[in-house]
Image 1 (cartoon, helix red, strand yellow):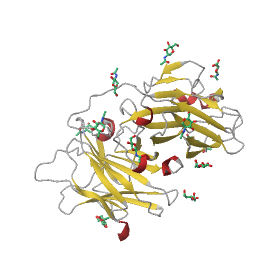
Image 2 (cartoon, helix red, strand yellow):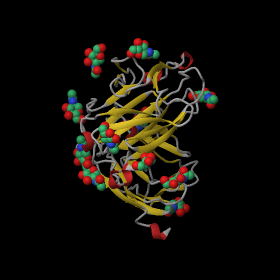
Image 3 (cartoon, helix red, strand yellow):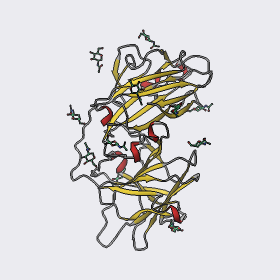
Image 4 (cartoon, protein in one colour):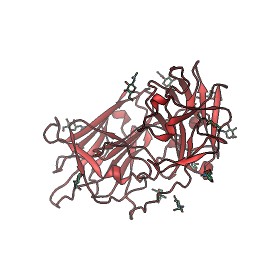
Length: 369
Ligand SMILES: *[C@@H]1O[C@H](CO)[C@@H](O)[C@H](O)[C@H]1NC(C)=O
Ligand SMILES: *[C@@H]1O[C@H](CO)[C@@H](O)[C@H](O)[C@H]1NC(C)=O
Ligand SMILES: *[C@@H]1O[C@H](CO)[C@@H](O)[C@H](O)[C@H]1NC(C)=O
Ligand SMILES: *[C@@H]1O[C@H](CO)[C@@H](O)[C@H](O)[C@H]1NC(C)=O
Ligand SMILES: *[C@@H]1O[C@H](CO)[C@@H](O)[C@H](O)[C@H]1NC(C)=O
Ligand SMILES: *[C@@H]1O[C@H](CO)[C@@H](O)[C@H](O)[C@H]1NC(C)=O
Ligand SMILES: *[C@@H]1O[C@H](CO)[C@@H](O)[C@H](O)[C@H]1NC(C)=O
Ligand SMILES: *[C@@H]1O[C@H](CO)[C@@H](O)[C@H](O)[C@H]1NC(C)=O
Ligand SMILES: *[C@@H]1O[C@H](CO)[C@@H](O)[C@H](O)[C@H]1NC(C)=O
Ligand SMILES: *[C@@H]1O[C@H](CO)[C@@H](O)[C@H](O)[C@H]1NC(C)=O
Ligand SMILES: *[C@@H]1O[C@H](CO)[C@@H](O)[C@H](O)[C@H]1NC(C)=O
């Protein structure tokens, strides 16, 4: 363990901008494709307010289909009602040409809901590539469950290619493809390698609902997550954003250890298992103090990853976002990653956390140059 220190996970910190970012609820630079709707058509989704267009012009080949009526429930987001499937050809690619080209950084999300669109009730499996890089394998395990995959991608080309690759007898398909321009100064990686989303969690949610656009100007999807033996604290005040611009709906709630049920009331911890011990993880921890503490009181804590100090001690500013993030990830060669947020000895309040994002570096030819 000792020899990995410092190498393991270098940290950095993003403080709040001096002013509250003015809400820019506009879709400048967004590419939102609802695969399978009639050629040339478009619509605005009433739930998200996002404007979708058909995939004509972004891909050649492909057949448009609707999911089976029994899967068309009212709660389903509209982009999932139709799909484009690719019964011919091994590799079929969408080409997106974002305005900022290769000088930009993009969140790219591919979404899938099988819904027995072909009436065969055969759950498909196929590979997804971004540019020349293997992205992930899409494994549909339930016809009615939406799945999506996200990368934070820095293209080496002015265009972004997303390819579906047939790997067995089943047919690749896709429900929606979305691209959002990000701030190039955020989510920085060694050698501009791309990141695949592992989890993006909103702690202490009072609504239990996902948060995305227009709450999130970058349309990241934040999933509510309950850590065991934690209680929510919340505020109705505004919170200063930093360059990560985590939405107010996410930052205005946090969790602290439950003073009654927590076995360790001074600590918040969570862990995950690496799919592959060679994987490299980037982690982004988002904090804001939500309680106005008297001068005589403090909330101070340190963050450890697998028993090594990652960052701290720190005290999040009142109503102001702080992001602690990985700069150079180490490949630990281990399966389990443990994050421990411990109260310092002198702190009068337990630790808190508002949200976390964990990404895996995409390995691939483009990223290993
Ligand atoms: C939308 O936001 C972009 C910056 O993200 C800005 O340049 C543009 O002026 C905005 N458009 C409108 C209509 O507000
Ligand atoms: C497929 O597209 C054609 C023409 O673009 C359209 O007429 C048809 O309704 C579409 N089918 C489905 C299932 O949306
Ligand atoms: C949507 O379709 C209408 C016509 O049906 C067209 O006038 C409009 O420009 C389209 N909008 C986009 C964003 O493609
Ligand atoms: C760059 O774009 C060209 C033309 O679209 C394409 O042939 C090439 O494969 C792309 N390269 C990468 C790395 O995506
Ligand atoms: C890497 O590049 C080689 C040759 O250029 C190619 O055969 C292989 O499929 C690529 N692998 C990935 C994961 O893209
Ligand atoms: C598929 O998911 C739904 C909920 O989305 C669940 O009710 C159903 O039991 C699942 N089916 C299977 C085969 O797991
Ligand atoms: C990463 O991207 C930036 C901006 O596009 C570029 O200036 C820099 O040279 C790139 N670094 C590497 C190692 O590719
Ligand atoms: C926390 O949320 C509850 C329920 O929405 C609200 O009644 C309460 O005022 C909030 N607490 C603070 C400190 O804003
Ligand atoms: C992007 O991030 C940088 C560095 O954190 C910041 O200075 C800049 O204001 C941000 N730009 C936007 C549009 O948020
Ligand atoms: C783990 O990743 C390495 C390097 O990319 C690869 O060679 C190996 O096959 C992977 N192992 C598993 C179990 O997928
Ligand atoms: C965190 O604090 C607990 C006691 O509250 C202690 O058992 C544990 O070793 C500490 N973890 C680290 C990494 O310091």
